[in-house]
Length: 95
Length: 236
Picture 1 (cartoon, each protein chain N blue to C red):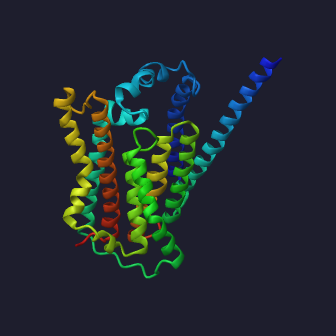
Picture 2 (tube, rainbow over the protein chains, first blue to last red):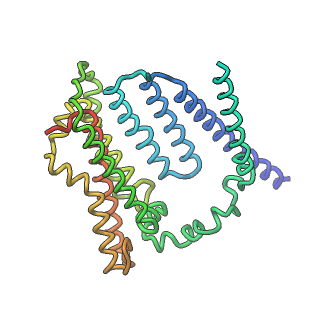
Picture 3 (cartoon, rainbow over the protein chains, first blue to last red):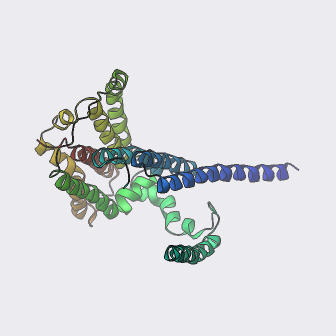
């Protein structure tokens, strides 16, 4: 009895873990489609930052803290800043 | 109109033709986290079993980055340095960007000035503890670079860029490459091969931290340099 309950609990926990990942992956997909469709480059840069941050959550959740830190610092942080600086020089609208 | 439609249909067919084999491959992959998957049984099993002992750092990722796969990491350090060189060469010829007419709000100004020292200390902590905790040279270096960029948002970017002389900036940016090359060559007498770290634990620890510091300082300076070059604050 206890064994089956434990097994069931384990199964549920795995499912909750997968569900969390699925939600994050759906958000990633939404961001990616948004980046591909938007014409406003500044909005794209911010969406890209959001994309990196969600991906950082995926890494952290899947037990890769080193990659998560890099993703947060490089992907969500520095890359966004560099994108925005370039956009401020070349213009905001895609032609 | 007709041609466009034919093009779309062709695209859809090509995507489907690519998707089918990819999905076929995906289905055959072992479940994520499955202990018997080939990814967990061959090389990585060896790293997990003896990596901390052989690699010389408790954080296995750092052991792989700085010891087992040191050549790859050296390539990465070289790549970001080269990226800065290329950007500086291209952006240096462009006309200077006009100054931002909107001054930062006093709140932003105050918060960034307040946070600056703490970010710097945290960056140093991440760099120096890279061999025991998650993080390391790259992550800490990015934090350092981010701090410099934040400061140049509230102070003038040129003021921050001129805090260090142009010659010193170049040496700072080359720190990662130089320190890594030095440690790599030191591997010849100390360990018997290039990029080797010595077996003596104390010395190995010192060299690991030196590598992290080099990568961190070099990476931070390179990232700040990329920002300065693109923002047009790099002319001295």
